[in-house]
Image (cartoon, rainbow, N blue to C red; front, top):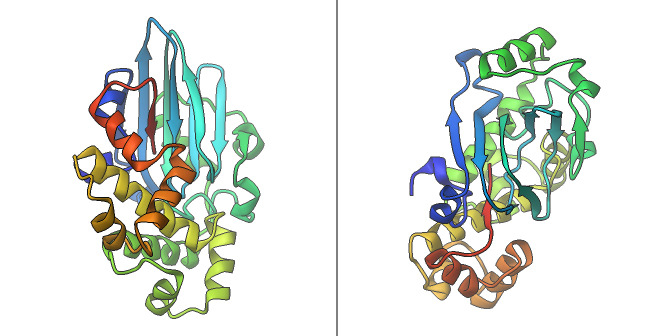
Length: 257
């Protein structure tokens, strides 16, 4: 599975129900935006998508309006019916803060109309979306670059599995790191680390890896029981049940945009 598919659980089953495409941002926005994405569907029967999110704010536009979606700490569900499409922008962790410089924690588990921040704004293409962001403007903040780098370090360095590891990498105390993530990302460093591990575990299971004990230790869980409990708390089913679902045709899919 390539890096662009990370976060999509049961990816093969999901692809049979909707088309998800990702588009890179323009160079001048790439330090704040991870990617643009578009989902299109045409269904004869309703299909429920369960989403296990990344630590990112998403800006989404549908025919009936635009929405700012903060980081959701629990599973998020969306029923797709008939035909439709969404165009969206996924910001890097902390990347939305320069456009809306208030504590990101106020957006956590919240959905706001885009008008509340950007005024009347209804793009129909990524070019229009980016032009709207440029028109709105943003405030340069070196802390955002720092947060983005810390998140990148968590992704590339498998030895960073605990907050104390991240503190050693960043040179910050746990309290300072907690404050920065609350202000810029909206969730704690521990939440981000846990979510990265969960996405990695789900990806391995989708690829056919079912050695729970080895996987648990490799990803930094205390033991197999700890891994199973953490996975079930977020996904809503045990690793074994989820792995079986990856090999069959379940009723729903879980993705992380």
